Structure formats: structure tokens, C-alpha cells
Length: 209
Ligand SMILES: [Zn+2]
Image (cartoon, rainbow, N blue to C red; front, side):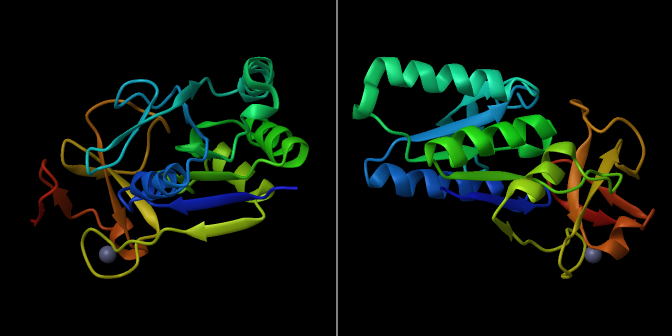
């Protein structure tokens, strides 16, 4: 049986860069990697993982809640097209937090348990309200291995463990979990998560008021 690995991180810690690195390693060995992203996350256009370096990797865009059905059809299609000639060496999933609990159990069961395909999932652990994402808590349950991609606070040198949302440059800790708009996020330590005096400027430069 293949394993499920969950690599979690705060915002801007380099999740997509790490995914791109692993993807490259498999490609170098001529292995077949399937990359999956939730359709919720279409910042960069559906069907791509974009690292901050600008590198783009093609991905399958799957609707949250549809993983069991989609992956079943995908496996059947692969089998009909290629039979034993093409096996999937690894599945990489980005933004796992946006998937449902059943999506996570489905991919673990269908890929790892039934077809011996390892899965490496990347995602945020908690949202800007410090609540767990459904997909991430399910990933913690099904994962044999849990790793953290670490980074430091945007406002000091402590380890960042939380995500702070800024709207119109002000920190906010309430609102919808998923919002595609003008807000920006920063990785922060616990102390700075609570700091109402923080302000940011666009283009990722940071100022104190
Ligand atoms: Zn800090």
C-alpha cells in the first residue's frame, strides 16, 4: 500500500515551489505524475499550479465534493487508453484545504489503498480566523506522514504559524473563509496575529505605522 503525505504551511511559505520541485524530480526520471487542484482556486486560471517563480505546471481541476466520482472515471479512462502500459507514479494535490472530507478519504482509498499510488498533498492548515479547513483536517486524519513547510513571520523573525488577512491594509479576523477579491494575506507569528497596529502596502513591502 502506498502512503499519503500531507505537507502543510502558512501562506507564502513556498508550497507551490515545493510541489514544482517534487514534480520536476519525478519528470527527470520519466515518471508519470498527476497534479490535481480544486476548481475553487482559479487565481492563475483553471488547471495550473503556479509557483511564485512564475513556473506553471498543468493540473487537473476538480470540483470540491467530486473527487470520488472524478478519480474513478479518471482511473477507468487511463486503464482503457493505456492498460498496463501507463501507470501513475505519484499524485500531487495543491490547495488541499478547499476539498471536502470525502474527497480526502476518496483519494486515499482509491489511489493509495486500492491502486498503490502515493499521494503528496499540499495545503494550509488553518484559515485567517484560526479555524481548521475541512480538507486539511481530513488530510491530517488520512496521512501517514505530516510535514510542515516552515517560514518566518512577515513582521518579525519568529516562526509563522497563522495567516492574517488584510483588507484595505487593515488586519481583519472575521468574514467568509473563501473570498476571492482584493484581500491579501501574510504569514504571522501568534503575537503579530493579535496586533491591530499592523499595516501593509501592496507589492509585498511592509511598513509599520
Ligand atoms: Zn511576528
